[in-house]
Image 1 (cartoon, rainbow, N blue to C red):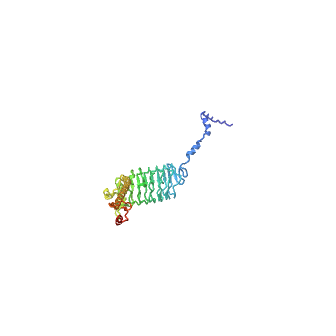
Image 2 (cartoon, helix red, strand yellow):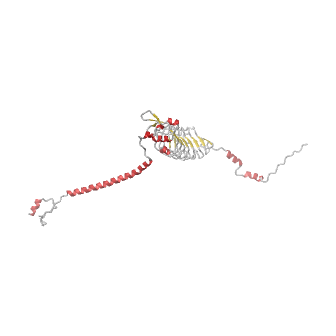
Image 3 (cartoon, rainbow, N blue to C red):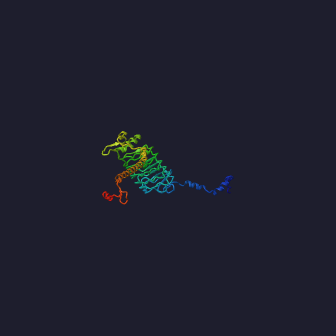
Length: 344
C-alpha cells in the first residue's frame, strides 16, 4: 500500500504584489531591454563616437597611430579628448581638418611628413592644450596658424625645417608654458615673438644654427630672465659669422649689444605711422601753395616787362588842325620828312 504523499501548501500571493505582476508584461520598456542597452559597449571602432579606423578607449582617447593614413579620419566627435595620429602619412592639413572635435585637449601629429598646414587647419580647437608637430618637414608657418588655440599650454615644433618663425605665426598664446624649437634651421628669433608669450617658462633651443650677433638680442634678454636648465643651456650655442667659434646663448650680457641699434618701441612705431601720412599731406599742400605763389609772381613780372618794352610817342605841337592835311601820330608808317612836306 502506497503511502500518501503530502505536499507543502503554497503560500498565498500578497494582495499588493499581484497587480504588479499583472502589469509587468505591459511595461513599455522591459527590464531585459534596459539590461541589454547598458551592457552594449560604447566607443568601439565604427561607432559614432570613434573614427572607424581607430581604436577608442573610455575617457575619449582615440588611437590612430601607424595606420598609414593619408588624411585625418572622418567621424571625429565632441567626446574625443585625445587624438593620436602619429606615424602616418599626413602630408598636409586642410582647412577644418579637425571639425567636430571641439573638445579635443591633446593632438599628436608626430612623424607624418607634414610639409604644409593651412592657416585654418586648427579652427574649432579652442580647448586644445597640447599640440605635437615634431619630426615633420615644415619650412614655414602662415600668420595666424595657432591663433585659435587660446588654451594651448605645450607646443612642439622640434625636428622640422623652420628657418624663420614670425610672431604672427604663433599669435598671442597667453597660456603657453612650453615651446620646443630644437633641431630646426633657426638663426634668430624675430623681435616680439617671445613678448607675446607671457606664461612661457620652458624653451628648447638646441640643434639650431644660431648666429651670434645683434639679431639674438631679444632671445638673450629673455634667457637672462628665464634661466634654462644646465643641460639645455650648455647645448644652446651660437656661431660667430666668419669664424668657427661657438658661444653659449646664455653668455651674452646686455652690454654685449650696446653697439646694436635699439629697435623702435611699439609707441614709437605708432607715432611714426600716425604722423607719416599727416606730414606727407602737409608737405604736398605746402608745395602746391608755393608753386601757386611762384607762378603768380612770374606772371606779374612778365606783365611789367611787357609794359616797359611798349614805345611811347609824344604829341606833335606843330600839328595842323586841318583834318585833311594832318598826319595821325598813331600812323608809324609815314616818316617825319613826308609829314613836314605835306604841311608845307
